[in-house]
Image 1: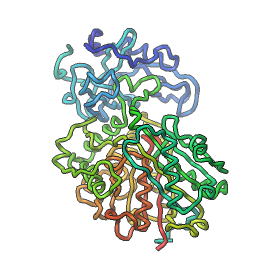
Image 2: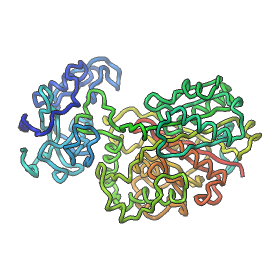
Image 3: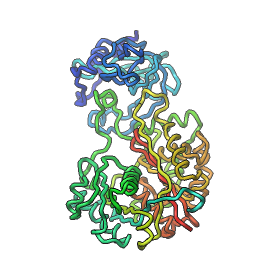
Image 4: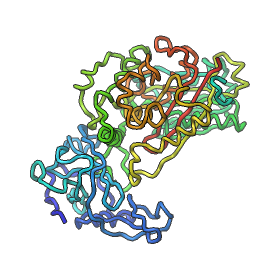
Length: 156
Length: 377
């Protein structure tokens, strides 16, 4: 498992856009990121891995689902560099990179680059690995950085 | 019917559009009502002859009950769609007329998003799985799709630029357009990114304004003032499986819409004289040129660079200037311009001999629709 980045990052104002980590449908996902684990639901009946979290399986409509840990590995499907922050939390963060990751287990998920990485560190098709960044007490994001090599600058 | 398309039983017989830009102090329904008045005037209809109302709502404004009340109507059929592009509204009105629920339907959209300083792109996703990463605004998924298109097919920034450049050149000939100053390739390439590789010039403006359209039966249309513009074919899809489906952002699900709209009309891409593609961002144009069969998938870049989509090209696109340069009316002005083109009333922007037009649109990355219209020679 890749070492989590420092929980004292980032040196920004506290974010206001924070998930309700007690919402029962998504709570196990947020509990997982807090432990540096990428968790998703798998349907008990058809075994489809589900993303985003949902109370029923969108393939076979079976309620519930078993939460399990993914490898945290994937490849970059695409990425984009935000030069404008549309929400106040992100105004001071530009430029920042959002990427769509094709996970090894199949699902695709929107994520971002961890602190210290820049667009020049990744490419479409390149392997990326999950890293975890605490953004507020009890809330960590799963981000994806290059699987090999150093970041262009070390975390502050 | 022209070019052996299927016979059509409904037509657009009236169009109206208000001043575009900033209309401070006016509310959405009031602007929609002005457009309604212009459209029935264009059709040569009295208010009392309108027995159906289909309105388009944004942010809770523009409901049929509010617009209809302002207009003093008791329609036989009345409904609201809370998403735009106009295609879905046209299809609903066509079904209402064909089903006999009403005979003459007015469609309206009015908005004050600009003067009310509406902030686009800040509706957070459920559970904030994307919003917490800063994935906001339609420019985000559009930029991901464009980057992927560049990677897969070698599409260059210069090729992609032709969408914004062509539309600005068209807008320069459109007195109603908001952005009419010339735009060169150098201007474009030196302009700032919004969400790289997408530039500000590739993304819709925000504007106030109103648009209305009147549709009626073929029989009634024959008695009215304007040359009827018949609806020859329509198709829709709703694609709600999102990022868990590979390549969803490339919109391969539009291929099915294309197949069905051509089949419904009995026509093919080379029958289309003038093409309208709703453009929240220029990426919509890039993708739909391909999925609607004007060039092979992956080849929209060279197709644009070769000039095919220019006013004097083989398939002129968004002759009004679109949402990048004319005004942001959620696609509704594209339909107004299509009607003008098929009436032969597009002035300096007229496409010679235009008899068949198509309008393609999507609501975000969730719904897609297309309509083909034609006139009798």
